[in-house]
Length: 355
Ligand code: ATP
Ligand code: MG
Ligand code: MG
Image (cartoon, rainbow, N blue to C red; front, side):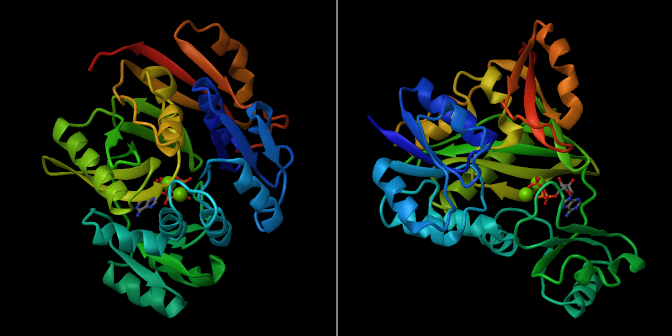
Protein backbone atom coordinates (compact mmCIF):
# COMPACT_ATOMS: atom_id res chain seq x y z
CA UNK A 1 0.00 0.00 0.00
CA UNK A 2 0.86 3.67 0.06
CA UNK A 3 3.43 5.10 2.43
CA UNK A 4 3.37 8.77 3.37
CA UNK A 5 6.80 10.28 3.99
CA UNK A 6 6.85 12.98 6.67
CA UNK A 7 9.72 15.42 7.23
CA UNK A 8 9.90 16.31 10.91
CA UNK A 9 9.22 14.21 13.97
CA UNK A 10 7.49 16.53 16.45
CA UNK A 11 3.97 16.23 17.81
CA UNK A 12 2.44 17.36 14.52
CA UNK A 13 4.23 14.53 12.71
CA UNK A 14 3.10 12.15 15.41
CA UNK A 15 -0.57 13.10 15.04
CA UNK A 16 -0.28 12.94 11.23
CA UNK A 17 1.13 9.41 11.53
CA UNK A 18 -1.72 8.43 13.86
CA UNK A 19 -4.27 9.70 11.33
CA UNK A 20 -2.51 7.93 8.47
CA UNK A 21 -2.62 4.66 10.43
CA UNK A 22 -6.33 5.10 11.06
CA UNK A 23 -6.82 5.48 7.30
CA UNK A 24 -4.87 2.30 6.58
CA UNK A 25 -1.75 4.09 5.33
CA UNK A 26 1.83 3.62 6.42
CA UNK A 27 4.20 6.43 7.41
CA UNK A 28 7.93 6.91 7.19
CA UNK A 29 9.26 9.78 9.30
CA UNK A 30 12.52 11.54 8.47
CA UNK A 31 14.03 13.60 11.28
CA UNK A 32 17.55 14.34 12.53
CA UNK A 33 16.53 14.10 16.20
CA UNK A 34 16.64 10.52 17.50
CA UNK A 35 14.27 11.46 20.36
CA UNK A 36 11.40 12.48 18.07
CA UNK A 37 7.92 11.82 19.51
CA UNK A 38 6.63 10.84 16.04
CA UNK A 39 8.95 7.83 15.74
CA UNK A 40 6.96 5.88 18.37
CA UNK A 41 3.87 5.77 16.17
CA UNK A 42 5.33 5.62 12.64
CA UNK A 43 5.92 2.41 10.70
CA UNK A 44 9.47 3.35 9.70
CA UNK A 45 11.81 6.18 10.52
CA UNK A 46 15.12 7.60 9.38
CA UNK A 47 17.41 9.56 11.67
CA UNK A 48 19.63 11.69 9.43
CA UNK A 49 20.42 15.33 8.73
CA UNK A 50 18.17 17.05 6.17
CA UNK A 51 21.29 17.62 4.05
CA UNK A 52 22.11 13.89 3.76
CA UNK A 53 21.25 13.28 0.11
CA UNK A 54 21.90 9.52 0.29
CA UNK A 55 19.43 9.19 3.15
CA UNK A 56 16.97 11.44 1.28
CA UNK A 57 17.24 9.23 -1.83
CA UNK A 58 16.47 6.09 0.19
CA UNK A 59 13.55 7.90 1.84
CA UNK A 60 12.19 9.10 -1.53
CA UNK A 61 12.40 5.57 -2.87
CA UNK A 62 10.40 4.19 0.04
CA UNK A 63 7.42 6.56 -0.02
CA UNK A 64 4.74 7.56 -2.52
CA UNK A 65 4.46 11.19 -1.42
CA UNK A 66 6.36 13.49 0.95
CA UNK A 67 4.82 16.03 3.29
CA UNK A 68 6.25 18.02 6.21
CA UNK A 69 5.20 19.08 9.68
CA UNK A 70 7.32 22.24 10.01
CA UNK A 71 7.97 25.10 7.63
CA UNK A 72 11.74 25.34 8.06
CA UNK A 73 12.55 22.30 5.96
CA UNK A 74 15.67 23.47 4.07
CA UNK A 75 14.78 24.56 0.52
CA UNK A 76 17.41 22.28 -1.08
CA UNK A 77 16.01 19.26 0.84
CA UNK A 78 12.52 19.88 -0.50
CA UNK A 79 13.83 20.49 -4.04
CA UNK A 80 15.94 17.31 -3.94
CA UNK A 81 12.94 15.23 -2.89
CA UNK A 82 10.60 16.97 -5.32
CA UNK A 83 12.73 15.75 -8.24
CA UNK A 84 12.02 12.17 -7.11
CA UNK A 85 8.57 12.03 -5.53
CA UNK A 86 5.66 14.48 -5.17
CA UNK A 87 6.16 16.92 -2.29
CA UNK A 88 2.85 18.23 -0.92
CA UNK A 89 2.33 21.06 -0.13
CA UNK A 90 4.73 22.08 -2.89
CA UNK A 91 8.16 23.63 -2.79
CA UNK A 92 6.77 27.09 -3.64
CA UNK A 93 4.42 27.10 -0.64
CA UNK A 94 7.38 26.22 1.53
CA UNK A 95 9.64 28.91 0.09
CA UNK A 96 6.99 31.61 0.31
CA UNK A 97 6.16 30.87 3.94
CA UNK A 98 9.76 30.49 5.12
CA UNK A 99 10.44 34.14 4.53
CA UNK A 100 8.14 36.76 6.05
CA UNK A 101 8.97 39.23 3.27
CA UNK A 102 8.09 36.88 0.40
CA UNK A 103 5.03 35.75 2.36
CA UNK A 104 3.79 39.31 2.70
CA UNK A 105 4.54 40.07 -0.94
CA UNK A 106 2.59 36.99 -1.99
CA UNK A 107 -0.34 37.80 0.32
CA UNK A 108 -0.66 41.35 -0.94
CA UNK A 109 -0.40 40.25 -4.58
CA UNK A 110 -3.14 37.68 -3.87
CA UNK A 111 -5.38 40.54 -2.71
CA UNK A 112 -5.41 39.49 0.95
CA UNK A 113 -5.60 42.23 3.62
CA UNK A 114 -2.43 42.46 5.74
CA UNK A 115 -0.72 45.03 7.96
CA UNK A 116 1.52 47.57 6.25
CA UNK A 117 5.11 46.36 6.08
CA UNK A 118 8.61 47.33 4.99
CA UNK A 119 11.74 45.44 3.98
CA UNK A 120 14.47 46.15 6.59
CA UNK A 121 18.17 45.50 5.99
CA UNK A 122 19.74 48.17 8.17
CA UNK A 123 19.01 50.56 11.03
CA UNK A 124 18.62 53.31 8.41
CA UNK A 125 15.88 51.27 6.68
CA UNK A 126 14.19 50.87 10.05
CA UNK A 127 14.31 54.56 10.89
CA UNK A 128 12.91 55.50 7.49
CA UNK A 129 10.14 52.88 7.67
CA UNK A 130 9.14 53.94 11.19
CA UNK A 131 8.67 57.44 9.94
CA UNK A 132 6.25 56.15 7.32
CA UNK A 133 4.38 53.81 9.71
CA UNK A 134 3.84 56.41 12.42
CA UNK A 135 6.77 55.63 14.73
CA UNK A 136 5.39 52.27 15.86
CA UNK A 137 5.72 48.76 14.59
CA UNK A 138 6.80 45.18 15.11
CA UNK A 139 10.26 44.30 13.82
CA UNK A 140 10.50 40.60 12.89
CA UNK A 141 13.31 38.53 11.44
CA UNK A 142 12.42 37.32 7.96
CA UNK A 143 13.35 33.72 8.79
CA UNK A 144 13.10 31.22 11.67
CA UNK A 145 10.94 33.21 14.11
CA UNK A 146 8.35 31.35 16.20
CA UNK A 147 6.57 31.80 19.55
CA UNK A 148 7.41 35.49 19.32
CA UNK A 149 11.15 34.80 19.13
CA UNK A 150 13.00 37.00 16.66
CA UNK A 151 10.67 39.95 17.26
CA UNK A 152 10.80 43.38 18.78
CA UNK A 153 7.91 45.66 19.56
CA UNK A 154 8.61 49.30 18.80
CA UNK A 155 6.12 51.47 20.65
CA UNK A 156 8.18 54.52 21.62
CA UNK A 157 11.12 56.43 20.12
CA UNK A 158 13.62 54.77 22.50
CA UNK A 159 12.59 51.26 21.36
CA UNK A 160 13.89 51.87 17.85
CA UNK A 161 17.44 52.80 18.85
CA UNK A 162 19.78 49.95 17.97
CA UNK A 163 16.79 47.64 17.39
CA UNK A 164 18.19 46.25 14.15
CA UNK A 165 21.40 45.14 15.88
CA UNK A 166 19.48 43.80 18.88
CA UNK A 167 17.51 41.61 16.51
CA UNK A 168 20.81 40.21 15.25
CA UNK A 169 21.38 42.49 12.24
CA UNK A 170 19.63 39.97 9.99
CA UNK A 171 17.17 40.66 7.16
CA UNK A 172 13.88 41.69 8.75
CA UNK A 173 10.48 43.19 8.11
CA UNK A 174 8.79 45.98 9.99
CA UNK A 175 5.05 45.60 10.40
CA UNK A 176 2.55 48.21 11.31
CA UNK A 177 1.49 47.76 14.96
CA UNK A 178 -2.11 46.55 14.88
CA UNK A 179 -4.48 47.37 17.75
CA UNK A 180 -6.42 44.17 17.34
CA UNK A 181 -9.47 43.08 19.28
CA UNK A 182 -8.43 39.42 19.22
CA UNK A 183 -6.56 36.82 17.22
CA UNK A 184 -8.34 34.19 15.17
CA UNK A 185 -7.26 31.49 12.77
CA UNK A 186 -8.68 29.42 9.98
CA UNK A 187 -7.60 25.91 9.08
CA UNK A 188 -8.09 25.42 5.35
CA UNK A 189 -7.46 22.41 3.14
CA UNK A 190 -7.10 21.97 -0.61
CA UNK A 191 -7.02 18.69 -2.52
CA UNK A 192 -5.16 17.73 -5.71
CA UNK A 193 -8.22 18.66 -7.80
CA UNK A 194 -8.32 22.17 -6.32
CA UNK A 195 -11.34 21.70 -4.08
CA UNK A 196 -11.13 23.47 -0.74
CA UNK A 197 -12.62 23.01 2.72
CA UNK A 198 -12.47 25.42 5.66
CA UNK A 199 -12.92 24.69 9.33
CA UNK A 200 -14.70 27.17 11.56
CA UNK A 201 -12.75 30.15 12.82
CA UNK A 202 -11.04 29.67 16.19
CA UNK A 203 -10.30 32.45 18.66
CA UNK A 204 -6.76 32.16 19.95
CA UNK A 205 -5.36 33.25 23.27
CA UNK A 206 -1.59 33.35 23.88
CA UNK A 207 0.39 33.30 27.13
CA UNK A 208 4.09 34.19 27.11
CA UNK A 209 3.87 34.37 23.31
CA UNK A 210 2.81 30.71 23.11
CA UNK A 211 -0.67 29.61 22.05
CA UNK A 212 -2.60 28.67 25.19
CA UNK A 213 -6.20 28.16 24.07
CA UNK A 214 -8.23 27.99 20.87
CA UNK A 215 -11.99 28.39 21.19
CA UNK A 216 -14.76 27.55 18.71
CA UNK A 217 -17.08 29.16 17.97
CA UNK A 218 -14.89 32.26 17.84
CA UNK A 219 -17.74 34.70 18.50
CA UNK A 220 -17.45 36.70 15.29
CA UNK A 221 -20.17 37.77 12.88
CA UNK A 222 -21.14 35.53 9.98
CA UNK A 223 -19.83 38.12 7.51
CA UNK A 224 -16.43 38.13 9.23
CA UNK A 225 -16.33 34.35 9.23
CA UNK A 226 -17.14 34.26 5.56
CA UNK A 227 -14.47 36.90 4.80
CA UNK A 228 -11.95 34.75 6.66
CA UNK A 229 -12.90 31.66 4.63
CA UNK A 230 -12.65 33.63 1.40
CA UNK A 231 -9.14 34.87 2.23
CA UNK A 232 -7.98 31.41 3.29
CA UNK A 233 -9.29 29.94 0.03
CA UNK A 234 -7.63 32.70 -2.02
CA UNK A 235 -4.31 31.91 -0.34
CA UNK A 236 -4.33 28.15 -0.94
CA UNK A 237 -5.61 28.56 -4.47
CA UNK A 238 -2.96 31.21 -5.25
CA UNK A 239 -0.23 28.82 -4.10
CA UNK A 240 -1.72 25.81 -5.94
CA UNK A 241 -1.53 24.27 -2.51
CA UNK A 242 -2.24 20.64 -1.58
CA UNK A 243 -2.79 19.86 2.10
CA UNK A 244 -3.83 21.70 5.25
CA UNK A 245 -2.74 25.25 6.06
CA UNK A 246 -3.13 27.39 9.18
CA UNK A 247 -3.93 31.06 8.55
CA UNK A 248 -3.52 33.41 11.53
CA UNK A 249 -5.48 36.65 11.48
CA UNK A 250 -6.03 39.75 13.57
CA UNK A 251 -9.61 40.83 14.15
CA UNK A 252 -9.85 44.60 14.28
CA UNK A 253 -13.02 46.26 15.55
CA UNK A 254 -13.42 49.90 14.65
CA UNK A 255 -16.60 51.92 14.87
CA UNK A 256 -19.29 49.32 14.45
CA UNK A 257 -17.41 47.17 11.94
CA UNK A 258 -15.12 44.14 12.10
CA UNK A 259 -12.26 43.57 9.72
CA UNK A 260 -9.56 40.96 9.37
CA UNK A 261 -5.87 41.23 8.57
CA UNK A 262 -3.84 38.11 7.85
CA UNK A 263 -0.86 37.89 10.23
CA UNK A 264 0.95 34.79 8.98
CA UNK A 265 0.41 31.47 7.29
CA UNK A 266 1.77 28.06 8.26
CA UNK A 267 2.05 25.50 5.43
CA UNK A 268 1.08 22.58 7.65
CA UNK A 269 -1.36 21.38 10.26
CA UNK A 270 -1.57 23.99 12.98
CA UNK A 271 -1.77 24.04 16.77
CA UNK A 272 -4.91 26.20 16.62
CA UNK A 273 -6.62 23.38 14.70
CA UNK A 274 -6.16 20.65 17.31
CA UNK A 275 -9.79 21.11 18.43
CA UNK A 276 -10.86 19.48 15.13
CA UNK A 277 -9.73 16.10 16.52
CA UNK A 278 -12.74 15.98 18.82
CA UNK A 279 -15.24 18.43 17.34
CA UNK A 280 -15.25 17.27 13.70
CA UNK A 281 -15.58 13.88 12.03
CA UNK A 282 -12.53 14.64 9.91
CA UNK A 283 -9.73 16.21 11.95
CA UNK A 284 -7.14 18.51 10.38
CA UNK A 285 -4.71 15.57 10.56
CA UNK A 286 -7.07 13.20 8.70
CA UNK A 287 -7.73 16.01 6.25
CA UNK A 288 -4.05 16.63 5.55
CA UNK A 289 -3.36 12.93 5.02
CA UNK A 290 -6.36 12.65 2.67
CA UNK A 291 -5.20 15.67 0.66
CA UNK A 292 -1.55 14.66 0.29
CA UNK A 293 -2.52 11.06 -0.49
CA UNK A 294 -4.58 12.39 -3.40
CA UNK A 295 -7.88 11.44 -1.77
CA UNK A 296 -10.97 13.66 -1.69
CA UNK A 297 -11.32 15.97 1.31
CA UNK A 298 -13.56 15.10 4.22
CA UNK A 299 -16.21 17.37 5.64
CA UNK A 300 -14.85 20.22 7.77
CA UNK A 301 -18.16 20.57 9.55
CA UNK A 302 -18.05 20.99 13.33
CA UNK A 303 -20.44 18.89 15.42
CA UNK A 304 -19.54 20.32 18.85
CA UNK A 305 -18.24 23.41 20.56
CA UNK A 306 -14.69 23.08 21.78
CA UNK A 307 -11.92 24.70 23.76
CA UNK A 308 -8.43 23.39 23.12
CA UNK A 309 -5.91 24.02 25.89
CA UNK A 310 -2.19 23.49 25.35
CA UNK A 311 -0.31 21.73 28.13
CA UNK A 312 3.02 23.51 28.28
CA UNK A 313 5.98 22.52 30.44
CA UNK A 314 4.87 22.01 34.01
CA UNK A 315 1.20 22.11 33.02
CA UNK A 316 1.62 18.34 33.02
CA UNK A 317 0.64 18.54 36.70
CA UNK A 318 -3.00 18.72 35.63
CA UNK A 319 -3.06 15.43 33.70
CA UNK A 320 -4.69 13.55 36.55
CA UNK A 321 -7.43 16.16 36.97
CA UNK A 322 -8.12 16.18 33.24
CA UNK A 323 -8.48 12.40 33.25
CA UNK A 324 -11.44 12.83 35.61
CA UNK A 325 -13.26 15.40 33.47
CA UNK A 326 -16.11 13.77 31.54
CA UNK A 327 -16.06 16.21 28.61
CA UNK A 328 -12.30 16.42 28.22
CA UNK A 329 -10.10 14.42 25.89
CA UNK A 330 -6.43 14.36 26.78
CA UNK A 331 -3.79 14.15 24.06
CA UNK A 332 -0.22 13.58 25.22
CA UNK A 333 2.77 13.60 22.91
CA UNK A 334 4.93 11.07 24.78
CA UNK A 335 7.82 13.50 25.26
CA UNK A 336 10.19 12.12 27.87
CA UNK A 337 11.57 15.39 29.14
CA UNK A 338 9.50 18.26 30.52
CA UNK A 339 11.02 21.62 29.64
CA UNK A 340 9.69 25.08 30.31
CA UNK A 341 7.80 26.39 27.26
CA UNK A 342 7.72 22.91 25.68
CA UNK A 343 4.41 21.68 24.30
CA UNK A 344 3.76 18.38 26.12
CA UNK A 345 0.17 17.76 25.08
CA UNK A 346 -3.24 19.37 24.82
CA UNK A 347 -6.74 18.83 26.05
CA UNK A 348 -9.94 19.29 24.07
CA UNK A 349 -12.99 20.19 26.16
CA UNK A 350 -16.13 19.48 24.18
CA UNK A 351 -19.71 20.63 24.70
CA UNK A 352 -22.89 20.36 22.62
CA UNK A 353 -22.93 22.78 19.72
CA UNK A 354 -24.65 25.97 20.83
CA UNK A 355 -24.00 28.22 17.87
P1 ATP B 1 4.06 31.65 15.90
O1 ATP B 1 4.53 30.88 17.08
O2 ATP B 1 2.56 31.85 15.84
O3 ATP B 1 4.62 31.17 14.58
P2 ATP B 1 5.70 34.00 15.43
O4 ATP B 1 6.91 34.08 16.29
O5 ATP B 1 5.86 33.58 14.02
O6 ATP B 1 4.59 33.14 16.16
P3 ATP B 1 3.78 36.15 14.93
O7 ATP B 1 2.61 35.25 14.88
O8 ATP B 1 4.10 36.92 13.72
O9 ATP B 1 5.11 35.46 15.46
O10 ATP B 1 3.59 37.17 16.13
C1 ATP B 1 3.48 36.71 17.46
C2 ATP B 1 2.44 37.51 18.19
O11 ATP B 1 2.88 38.88 18.29
C3 ATP B 1 1.11 37.56 17.48
O12 ATP B 1 0.35 36.40 17.78
C4 ATP B 1 0.55 38.86 18.03
O13 ATP B 1 0.03 38.66 19.33
C5 ATP B 1 1.78 39.75 18.13
N1 ATP B 1 1.95 40.52 16.89
C6 ATP B 1 2.59 40.10 15.79
N2 ATP B 1 2.55 41.00 14.79
C7 ATP B 1 1.84 42.04 15.27
C8 ATP B 1 1.43 43.31 14.73
N3 ATP B 1 1.76 43.66 13.48
N4 ATP B 1 0.70 44.11 15.50
C9 ATP B 1 0.38 43.78 16.77
N5 ATP B 1 0.73 42.60 17.34
C10 ATP B 1 1.45 41.74 16.62
MG1 MG C 1 5.07 32.06 12.92
MG1 MG D 1 1.97 33.45 14.78
